[in-house]
Image (cartoon, rainbow, N blue to C red; front, side, top):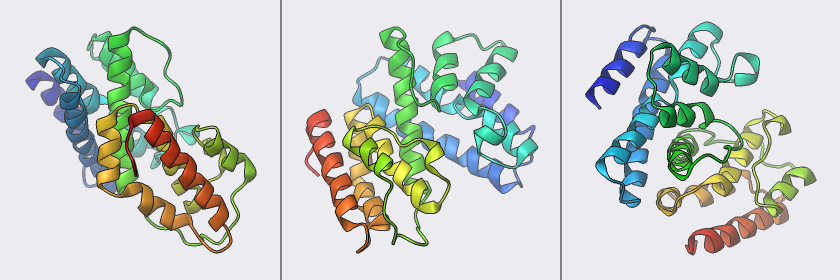
Length: 235
């Protein structure tokens, strides 16, 4: 573990931490590490796999530092896929743990291929940990909640699926996408963390208005139904 921390710190130190976006991703990384530790503990992993889960979290956003330095953005479609770039960075530096490589590569993808059970577990741990921090730290205000929600988006919630980035880039839609992240949570402890922070209610309240109340009520109903069925948690 010490060599991985040293590699991460040495790599990040190549970039200017006085740049807000660089420092934000540096701090984000260690928050994600903390959530990954919680999830890994809940799964009662042995020391080797616990440490591997931590390494996956530590390395998951390696591609972000080059991205924000060269493009001043976190938006992959106008720069490059930061998961793919992180995977390349590990290969370039001869870090050859294939499970870690795949977890880094696929942490930001809409879907993860079916690998062996161990690989998919590590992919899912880091994806959960990353989403938890994103939901906590971002999209915590909406300028105008007084809009109707597109029926295609409503159907995403009825089908218990993610909302595509192509739905739009308003602050309202960013919150909508984060709410849909609840459908892509893999472990009970991950969901418990989100609910302990009251994030479902907080995010729903950001988008609920007199104009769309019926739609947001439907979204809330579908989410609570899914959480009960998937994790046996009442919320």
